[in-house]
Structure formats: structure tokens, C-alpha cells
Image (cartoon, rainbow, N blue to C red; front, top):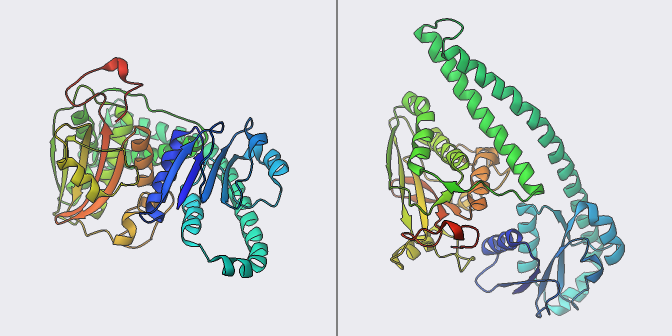
Length: 404
């Protein structure tokens, strides 16, 4: 099935490719185009519509259409296209809703005869469902805006509480005995965990509405791993969990935001600690790695491993976090990073759809990839960060232009 995506947004193009890789079989093709380009023939057209492009939108014959429209432009769009146009997703695009739309487009392909016989009965129902879906998208955006404002105030209180805990632990206002110190340390640990979750929820909401790039600079991944490990030491000690770390030296041409990558590591280690049995083990490995991003449909862990053996020059740095917990059910492996996705079962590792969704957001903002696989020793979460200009070469001036 041939798809044409009319956009200049590389993040939207990547999202569409990622979604198609999970909902479509091997016989699909996505062609990105600009509005001024001559569009090729396709089975399905995806339009990324902005205010200047609204008057230029035109239907492509009998092909299916899906429009991505900003909420503030929706009224103008409706007047141009027609108020009965059902195939609209409000920007910023929700991954789960986009997945549902494209899955329907790929798999619901009736024959011409059956399509004609079903069209009259189907259209009225489809119109109602799509309009209801559009209204739900609008409500979802309003709800998210409210949560962003509330979480902004919530974070300030958590920061103050953590600061007071630190003040008490410093004994600046009086000495503490051993038991009091331990209680306050645990309070600070829980407060910091809530603060990270609030920060992550805020970032998830803001990232939908603004193109926000991480502050890339040279950093020390070993230091990030050490900080993340030390923060989880009390939790691991309570369960007699051994944390084994083996991270290679950070290449000089690896640029990342240390605070954000530390948050990814803390989320992954917190996840591992919660699901590792008492007396278990967690392994953290870091090493240079070859990851071919040219075929964006291939994102499975098996393919990534094959690519590592097919090249002698790494173009990324990879971190693995493996724990000795129970295997993750197969049905969760592809959905575990989805926002607000939770199976509510005893093996659910999604963190209520927040912790791992935050990890994916940060890693993808860095131009990397994150995935999970079951191994013989237990579940393993892995992510890659791109190197700039090759493993051994250093070229800071090309930071903005180089791509893995």
C-alpha cells in the first residue's frame, strides 16, 4: 500500500514511519513530499496542513485522505474542505489515534462491489464516529492544557519539600539520630521520584505543543550512570539487588543532555528494581554500536542486533539495562512505551504509561532509539544515542548538520 505524506516536519514523518512499521505488513511505502512538489499516485494521502497551505489542499481522486490540522486552524479548514470531512487529526498528533487510523486504512480494504453495497450504510455511522473522535481530541487537548498548568505549580511544591529534606539532612537546624536521618532520606527519595514524574508529565505535555530540542553538549555517560545508580541504591539495598555496571568510556563525539539522559537511566533502573525479585541482579552495559537508520521501518531489536555485526565502524553509543525479573508478555513489548498505556497486571512495566513514555520522548529528541526485548537472563531495555561524524572522528562544527 502506497502512502504519500505532504509535510516538512521530519518528526511527523518519523512518527508516521514508526506507526506504519507496527500496523502494516512488509508491503507498504511512505513517500514524504512538500506541498509544492508534484505528488505521486498513492492509495492514501496524509496532509500536514498549516494556515498558508489551507487554500492549496485538493483531493486526489478516489484515494483516501487524512489531514493533520492545528486546532486554531480547524474552523478555516472545515470551511475550505467541508464540514463533513471526517478524516482529521488535531496537531500535535497523538500516536495512539494515528495508529488506529492507519491500521484501519491498511487492513480495511473491501472489494469494489462490497464497498458500493456497504457505502450508504457505513457513511452515516462513520461520520458520527469521526466527529465524536474529533470532539474527543479537542477535549483531550483542553485536559492536557489544564494538567500542564496544575503540574507546573505542583513541581514548585515538590522542589521546596526536597529542599527542606536536604536542609534537615545537613543538620543545619539540629542534629539527627540515625533513625531520623534514614526516615528523612527516604522522604527525600520519594519526593525526588514524584518530582521526576511531575517533570516528565510536564515535558510530555509541553513537547506536543512546541518543538523543544535537548541542550546537546559533551558529557560523561559513566557519570550519568553513577548518579542514576546511586539514587536507586536504597531501593536496591532493601531487596538485596546487586547492580553491576560496565560502561565503556564516552566517545568525544557523543553529544547529549546529561540531565535528560540521567532521567532516562533513573526511570529504567527504577523500573528494573521494581520488577527484580529479592536477591536478583541488574546489569548496565554501555558500548559503541552500529545502528543503520536508513530503513526506518526496521525498528525491532532482532534487526538491530543483526546490524551490529554487519559493520565495523559504530555510529552510535548503546546502553543496555537488563534485570533478572520475569519475562515481559509478548503483547506488551510493542506497546510498553505508549503514553498512558497500562495493562494493570502484575507484569505491567509501563509505569502507568508515564515512565517509559518519558524515556522514549527524551531518547527520540536526541535522535536515538529505545526498545525492549526478552533475553535468557531477563528483560533488557536498550537505547542508542547517535555519534556525530563517526566513532573516532571529532567534528564539533558539524554538530547541527551531521546525521546518523
